[in-house]
Length: 194
Figure 1 (cartoon, rainbow, N blue to C red):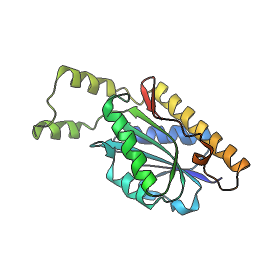
Figure 2: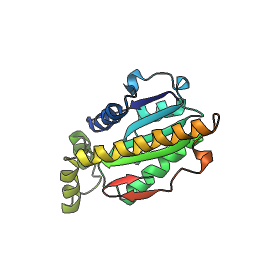
Figure 3: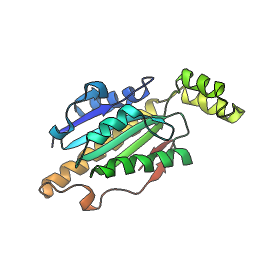
């Protein structure tokens, strides 16, 4: 099974998670701008930052080129990772990837620092009103991804690799999805996980 990690990062949050996955597994890691042809891989870990409830535009363009593959996705967002917004992001990411005939083996979202320019632009446009709750969330996001987030991401990635290795050992080119091992969406700790 040949695997790689491809990520898009704006503030370094998603890159940090991608590098943690690569360090723990030895799987090659590429920024989306230098991403390899997905056809050369059986399993792809696709990382993104959440923008308006979806993977960012660069990540989406690369995702559109990924077809018929086993996929693990990971993302960072400024919202709480166990929020309704995060659950909608997970569902939208699933839909984007499955539209290409891909099998989503697992996924992971964690909180990450919000680009200060995005906060300023939102305020200028009269978007989300700055409430005490919103400011508290933004301050908390400044601390993420933290060591616990990275440990959780590594755990999800290792489980994905194990599932896919076991499936390929027992079934010739049958996806992990066919074995019934794709879990249902649920929240784990401070991280949103599938």
